[in-house]
Image 1: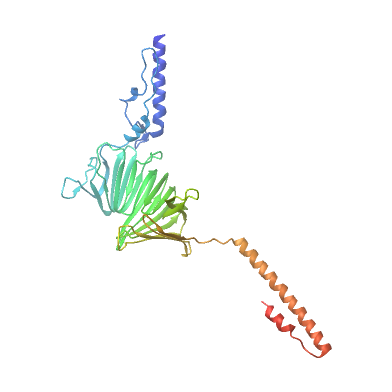
Image 2 (image 1 turned 180 degrees about the vertical axis):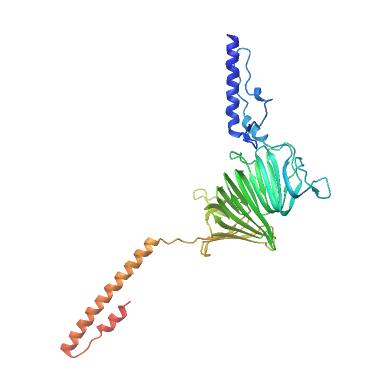
Length: 381
């Protein structure tokens, strides 16, 4: 009987372990599934007690598994062409060695249109670089729960698990940060004469982009947009390219008054805008003569290039906040108004003809003309 109870407890522990691993399994290159934590901790979830009782799994076990989804150091899994790396402890660029781990904080670059480089951060977390491109990993403590790559120039492809937990992987540039990425995404980053621009494209899964005074929320598969930033960071432009994207725009602080207590409070408010193809958002910032709070103006444009909404505010000050919201006219109401105007014009014209006939008959009878015709002329439209 005791052996039967122990066998049942062991089977229960294995089922619980498999259920936890299903949400964050990795796949190797040949498609075989690989466990994230290894087998040495398989028996740590539930242990059989002396009397056959089982202990519940530790709280946060799934989160601990997610934290171990990365290697301690990124691995160079593929290098073709001219690929170089600058290690923080070295003073010069060196050729990348395929199959070698490099410390976090290293810079990588590929030279030549045919050059390719792949960095693997985990079993199913990979960054691909091609062409004349450059990026860097962010230095952090070993065993950290997240990874960040900084784009410098070129074309990049990020391949992440579709069930990647939030706050685990970031893509950073001076003008914006990609957060909560899951699945595959691509980035084409270019430095212009007065700043930089980047085309962000979500291929599978989802991602979000956060910048100063704007958030692009929930970018889905096949959606993309372009971001342009000036070198002095006083201008940011968002341009729709593929799909309809939800953008949250900062409109500054607004003061509210409680009618019962007459208490005045200020709160940060935001405006929603749908960034569709050929639409745009332009954010202009100005440095004040006194203080550090920037004066900000945000304008939205439709697909024809016409300005729609405008918001202006000074950072951390509600006294200067304001907005101009464009009113969308209802096309059906406009058509009905036109029809009513046409009907009223026809009615006036008929009345005028009748009055003219009456005037003519009266002049024939009396031989004198009156002034009623001049009044009708004034009423014609």
